[in-house]
Length: 248
Image 1 (tube, rainbow, N blue to C red):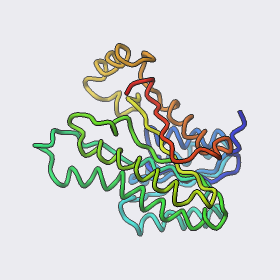
Image 2: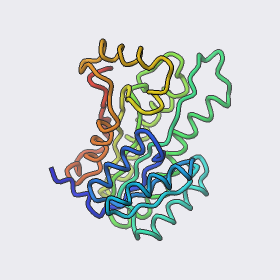
Image 3: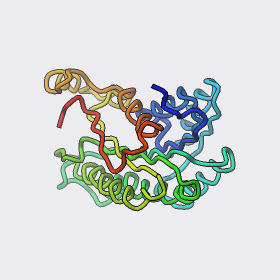
C-alpha cells in the first residue's frame, strides 16, 4: 500500500531509542524526512545519521519536551531545515514504577510532565504551520496502561490523559484537515525491556496470556503510526489504535 509519506517532514520525540527509533526508521523507509528529537542529543544525532544513509534528510536534536523554549527551538530548526512540518509523533515518555505509597511527588511529576506536558508543548508549537497549510497529522503514543496497572499510577494516569488530549485536539483542529490520533501499545520487546532481569518471565507470560501469543515488536507500533500518518488515514481522527495482540 502506498502511504504517501515520501517527501513529508516528520518530527518524532523520544526518537533516540526503542519505539521512537523504530518510528523514525519506518518513516525514513517510506521516504519521509525526519527530525529525531530526544532528551539525549547524542542518541538523536546517531539515529539521524543512521537513517540519513537511506537517502532521506534527517536531523537529530536534543529537546526537553517539558520546556516550551526547547520545543519552540526544535520546531524552528525543523522549519528552517525543511520549510514545513507535516507530521508530529508525540512519543517521549518513560516509566518510574512503584506503589503509590512509595511514590514521591517528583516521581509523579516527572512522568506526567514528559508524557502530557510534552504533548501539549509539541502540539502547540507545530499547529501554526499545519493550520496555515490546512493539513497535518498528529499521532500521540499512549499505552495499554491507560486501562490501569498496579505500580503505574503515574504512567497510567499520564497515558489515559493522552487519550483525552487526543480527542479534544481532534475536535479543535479537524476543520483545518489536521487529524489527531493515538496508538496504545501493549508489552513491546524493546532493548530496555530485554535488559530487565525478569525478561524471560515477561516473554513467557505474554506467550501464555496474549491472544496473539507473542510479545509486540517495535515494528508493530511503527507500522500503525505510519498508517495513521499516511494519506490513507485522512478521515480517521480522535481514535485510539490498540497494538496489543488482543490484550486488554
